[in-house]
Image (cartoon, rainbow, N blue to C red):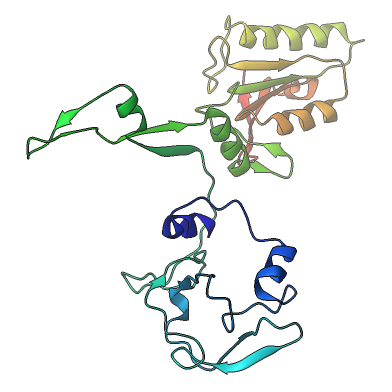
Length: 267
């Protein structure tokens, strides 16, 4: 973990050493570097996972050779300090609790930044501590990314057909889908009349509490299958479907996008 290492080294790490740099420092090509026979100018940081390790194998800084049965205190000096340098992984032991780490999948939607005293010094903000000494306070800031939130919500609310927006943030609560035979003027007029009443909030159907701006109406003259596929893809929480078939039952079809449950609501 380069961030951990940076804290112990006390300077920024620009990246791993190149193959040429490793060969010039160790005298061996990449793959044969080790802790034995290193130049004294090279300072070593040992991860705490190596503490107590015995009879281990490592490179010998000689191309084509490794050494086995290496031990601290005999083949290489015993480190005076062990460091926490590695990336934590599932199964590793927490140093304080002794419990194993459990791995979880997460996503970053916000940040906390430690600004130290950079800006309090710049603006000469000072406080007096309990010993009557003037100091610059430490400053921090935090923020949440709305675009990141949107991505995480979409990532966690979808299925093979498309998005499933939570009702609290859905762009529209209802997706209204109408379909009819354009040559059947009577049915067309009835379908459009019921749909317009819902869309304009001039009529209501029990179970649908639509308000202004709650409804996305797909009134395109395309196939019903494409309309329903697009409705699933867009993922509004509820779908209202009005067709000649639903009108035969004096109803509209009401479908829950998340559960796929479908019911008929009487007009």
